[in-house]
Length: 197
Image 1: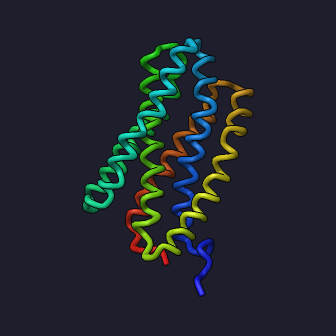
Image 2: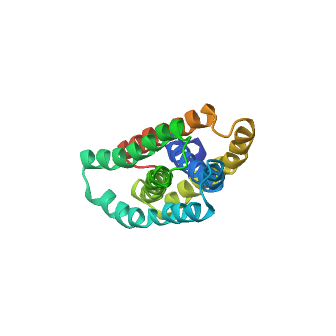
C-alpha cells in the first residue's frame, strides 16, 4: 500500500513551489492591467504588454524541459538562478512603479513572464523526473496542483483588498519579492532531491 503523498515532506516542496508561482501568475494576470491603467498607460499599450507577457513563456516552455534533462548540477543551479534573478529584479522594480513609461512596464512584464513561465514548467517537468513510476508522478502532480491552485485562487482577492487600501502599497511589493524568493529556494531544494516514493 502506498503511503499518502500528503505525508511526504519532500512532496510539499513541489506544492509550495508550484503554489507560489501560480499565485503570482494569476494575481499578475488579473491585476497588472489594472495597475498599469492606474499609472495612466493607454489601453493599447496595456494590451501589447499583456500579449508579450503571455508570449514570452513560449520559448521558456520549449527549452526548459530539454535543459533539465541535459544539464549537470551546476548548470541546473544557473538555470534556476537566471529566471529567479528576473523575478527578483521585477519585484524590486515595483518599488519604483510610479511611471507611465511603456518601456518600464514592458520590461517589468517580460521579467515576470520569464520567471513565472520557467517555474511553472520547471515544477511540472520535475513531477516526472523526480519519481520512478507513473502512479507516483500522478499522485505528486495531483497534490501539488490541488494545493497550488488553491493558493493561487486566494491571490487575486487578497491583492484586490490591498489595492483598495493603497494601489501602490509597499506590502504587496514585499509579498511579491518574498514569493519569488520562496519559489527559488523551493526549486533549488527540489533539484537536490533524489526520488519521491
